[in-house]
Image 1 (cartoon, rainbow, N blue to C red):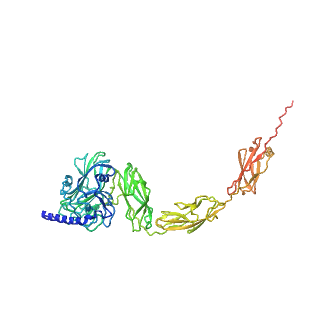
Image 2: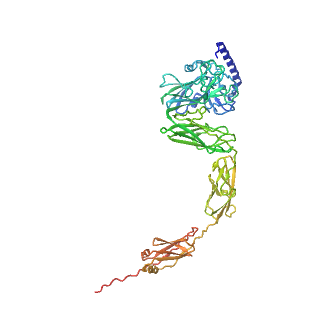
Image 3: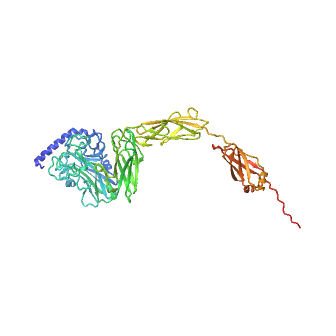
Length: 637
């Protein structure tokens, strides 16, 4: 539809008056909503610090065009204040062609406008949209990249939606880069994998607006677009539409060189119906390819309502050659999910839910596990996405899960809480258990339990109570032990009768419990050692045996049980026998007996009873052996 200049002027006035009315009724809302929050007082260094992402450094930042309210920092961009989509970037830098009220919710005006009264024709911006000269906001700075690409993570939105899609009111936005290797200024603000600049006419819901005027446009990029209604009350932003987070990139840079960057935005055609942009950061990457993947696993997908569940995220470098450096992962916890604990230490920043993975070697991975508490909603979908890696991922783009949630650098779980059934102690007889242990023993029993929601031995905790609980310990696996080995003769139980009473309580993640009463009886051990004695033995006994070429039997008595082993030591050698009927006999072979020197010999005998008690050693002395002198042979003359 084409309009005459007069008709166009009338439309402009109508658009402007509608916008002013909206501005008058909405300016008070700049701090009234709990989701998105804007800081229009941010200084240039603060803005630079917010834009300064991994892989590059930013310096010399200046605000070239714009007044207070047209630029600053923001937070809460992923937090919902009610109905409607959210910006999708938690914090960063904003620019707009009106004021902070242009960006803040609710969306209560279909044509919100705040005119700054400023016009400026930026030569780079007007190449994208000839009429983009009204209410400009321009930020410029220098960067030094470590890689050969620069990346901008952003969301662009406008009040021009939906009426003025495919019209001359094509509010324009540019990310301009100049420096070594570029003969002209380059624009990086293109919709990913296209040559379409990020403008109202190229990035939209996919339908021409009611006030289209024949201006060329693209309607095939709706996958990147969030329709926020048209003054219909959605809570999170005044903008009638805005893009899902986009990573716009420009290659051909030289690492270590200085480049100039310009972020520029202006209203096109007139000063009515504002637009805005949100930036997470700028990054630099190395275009050598890798393949990073993020996976997620839960201890159970059906935790108990108001209970806990363990969720593990794993960053995997599937590349066979290159290590993946400076890896960061953004985690998203839905409303109603609380992080109870994690094992990531300082690598996890709770303030922004970013896991600083660091370097992941080739063909390797790193993991982090969270204990999450869920509520009682029907379901929760915690998610994670690889936010940055120094090398390019050939099959995924960081921070675009809103448009492409199925890329392998994104992992989402669906947790469905169920009514919380109590755990069940399944071992040792259920409600009560009697255990007998001998004194001196510390191991009691192992409590086996299961939970209907989480399975056996998962997310269960154990505790002890009762009169004698302080004397016992219980492990995370349900193993019950005595802290000190009991002595039957000196009982420590509350009743002083060697019967110890404790109650085991097992609790699941939802707070439901089961109990088992334990009665531990300590039995007495035989602690009296056996006796042993060696029968009298003379040196003649030894001589007689050796002279008759017979083995020597050493005998004695013991009250140890039949079959217990007796060990004697004679002349440094050990010999054994067994107790039978209170007596024992040990054989010393002839060869050993014949070698006994002519001196006193001490014989020791040892034995232990079936309880392991050892008899006191009973040494005996064998008197000196005097062997007879043989007569020398006589020679007859």
